[in-house]
Length: 100
Image (cartoon, rainbow, N blue to C red):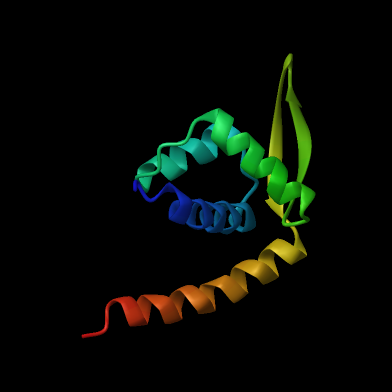
């Protein structure tokens, strides 16, 4: 087992965290996640972004710069509330995982 099934939810939390702080875009968040040791392809990330948007955690808009365009994602109120709830659960889990 390589752990990917467990990392998927952690990646979603990272995405929400960054999308609350500022608008994110695909390549930018791939690079940010790589700094945390996650190696994602666009074929993995974009369906995840689309799923988070479809479920109401993110909203997106297209930003044009000359001939280029980029889709920017921001966390919605639901995304913000979900991350706050998840932070409490992660903190509790972290405590249990590292208590000795």
